[in-house]
Length: 446
Image (cartoon, rainbow, N blue to C red; front, top):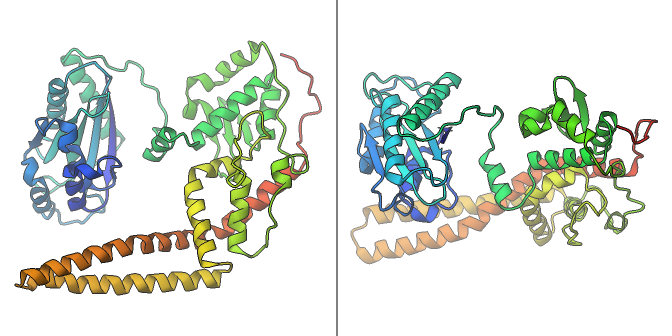
């Protein structure tokens, strides 16, 4: 059984190529860069000393230069500079040699007549998987590969056909729906909530606390969701513009019929959902004083609401955490870094924030200007000691630039999101202070 995935590459080709062969970067691959994709795919630590790396219409060692020359044949420039395809197999279903052969035949069947690509088989996980890095410009006529739903279906069909030819299983009835992004997978591995896991947890709780469909809908609304009922249940979380279809996003277990069955067979119906109350909840009663208009005070209050300062563990036994708070737990590390920056620099107003950004940007420009001069020395100087001294100075500048660039990015994000954070605080406090509107009939019945 093999699953496939297609990723569009829109950034530098050389970075992608360098990334694949760099073993130090494979722990957190950036699949947006074609150079990184090829580097990642051909990493010796994953491919078994590169014995399962094959170039189609190109040599893996010189793939970047060859692809770069071919891309010049295209008269119309495009932001898309490559495609990255992933073909994953079930654990223990096959061996690396067979998996690599399937990947090579798949790439040759789909792209071998007109395009160049690199195929590599990774063995570093339980699931053997192939990476295919494709140059989108044809070396025959300079025309480009067009990626669309039809081309992806062709990729899936060819992959399934090869699996059948090699005696492997295929997915008979694939489930339709949106795939998870890399950010979602990373958040799940780190135990952080995602929008999908938050909705799933809330829907499960709403079902457990309901004896009939009307009460299930009431529970979702008490949690702050907008609800629509049609061919399937659709919910809209607080602060979102669009409704999310439960069956499509969470699977067949959340269809109308499946939810009805779960409600019918509920053996022990829990009390209805209630909102957190700022007057009754100790965590809300101990909120620090909020100096409105101060950026630092606003961010500290937001961290307190999330539960960072009091190290609160949010479970079903606690008062319900507001949806906007749970959603931002994924960004907690960023909020902590931003709050520390604001406290360290004593930034309370936008004017102070702009002054800090301008000062930091100016320092970065000065260091980059000095680094360019040092690079020219390493290129043009004939004195070995002078070149070595310039390289050491360049290394020192690179080390100094990292925290400065990080502070600049944090400050830019604060400037863009400060008003949004204020609005979220107001929304949370308004929601947890307002009464819950429920149906007049709250009798438990099936």
